[in-house]
Structure formats: C-alpha cells, structure tokens
Image 1 (cartoon, rainbow, N blue to C red):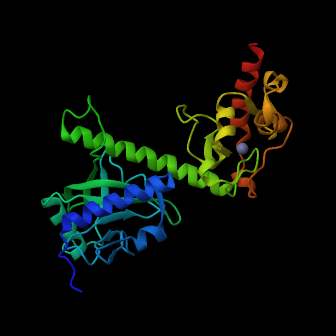
Image 2: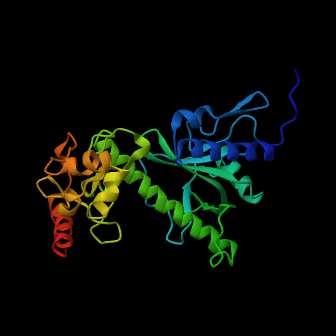
Image 3: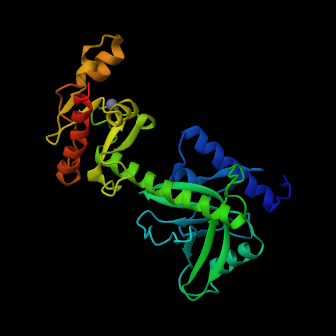
Length: 302
Ligand SMILES: [Zn+2]
C-alpha cells in the first residue's frame, strides 16, 4: 500500500494536536517519557516526539521536531533574564547536523516542541516554540515560546513582548512542576494528612507562600496534600504545629454537616502529620512555626 505523501506542516500540526489531547486527557502539562518516546501514528507511521539526544528529528521530517532539557539540569541558566530561553548546541561544533537543523528551523520559522524535564522521566511540554537567535560564541540558540490560543491584550502589542511573556510563564510553570514532583515523591505520592494516593488530587502545598522571601520551592518548604487539605491549610482551617501535629479550627469542630466534614476534617484533629521516610525531607520546623502562628492568630480573632 502506498502512503499518502506527508506534508511536514501537517505532521507538525498533528504532533501539536496530539500533545494537546494528551495533556487534556491527563489533566497535566507534564507527560511521561514513555508516552513522548513512542509518540503518535499518522497515516500508519509512528512519529516519536523525543529521542536520546536533546535536539530530535523524527525520520518523517527533514527538520527537528523537539528540543529537550534534561531533568538533571542545568535548569536555571537556560532561562535568560530577557524572558527568553537559551538552548545549548549539541556538542561544540556549530556545523553538527542537529545544530544545522535548528538553524534552518530558525530561518524558516518552523514551530517546534519544547520538553523540560521536571523529574526523572517526566517532562513539561510547551509548544509552539521558535528559534529566534543563534549565538555561536556561547554555543546556544535563543528560544521563544508562543501560544496561539493565549489572549494577551495589553502585552501583545509586539510579537517579541508577547513571546517573552509566554516564555516567562513557562519558566514559572517549570518551577512549580519541579516543586510538585519533588514534594510528592518525598511523601511517596500521598496526602500527608489523609494518606489519599490519587495523583490527580495531590498538590504540593507551600508552608511559606512563594510570594514571600523564604517561600522557596524546596522540599522542606513543602507538604504533599490532597486538594481538600491543601485548601484547608491555605485557608487556615487546619494548622500544622512545628512538632507535626494537625489542629483543626475549633469552630469547624463544632459544626455537624455530613461525612466529608466528619472524616475529612474533624477526624484529623490531634493527628500526626505523615512524614517522608528521609528526615532530611521533613518540613522545616521554623517555617511550620511561622505558619502555625498565623493559624493561631486567625483563631484568636473570633
Ligand atoms: Zn488529604
């Protein structure tokens, strides 16, 4: 059977659509490596989205389809202060075929996929991204993320401003997802209050919010919580003391309102927090104390 000739644009568009479907099915923009390596089928041909090297070109395309930053980093210095992203050449030879491929993608403004490792075997996906600069002195390309669906009225005055803004948002999401992955792994993917193990319902709560100077995205400033207990912790309905005891707001203890309240909240009062096996990953007591103080002050106001 002869195959219909595949237009490169059509394959790229199909790759983007497939990614959108995968993210929506999983309710997450972080996809596992196996899914990305296998990829999708178009006209009976398998198109993987990533390979063993950072710059990846599937056989059916003449130019690269994706660029990958490994989870082991370096992840901070890939984002430039201008809001754009710096991506290292493959090796040190600017004429290596992978580097030539990206350079051609830049000249033709071909949209690519960006994969940023946020944990072992797990990648945050962003598309379309464009190569917008070639820096042979530093052996890097400058990369900008775009998002056709995004409505940015006040920022979209210039295409550059828009891309810098969207790239900066991707950077922020990379940080958030790395934090989530690391905190959930420390707690063996369960809620530290109720042991719930449903990954889709688990979140990484900050002890000190990330808007404050000490609210760093480190494991000792995080607790793995289900969405109910995360909201209850953020809303000062439950407090966690520096000796890892859970206290429930006494006003909530007096209410009677069905099983969720009884088991989900009231039953936690006085219980110990479920802690990571490794002590080095336990929540920081000073940060817990600071937050617990807020909980107590909130109680005192009524
Ligand atoms: Zn929970």
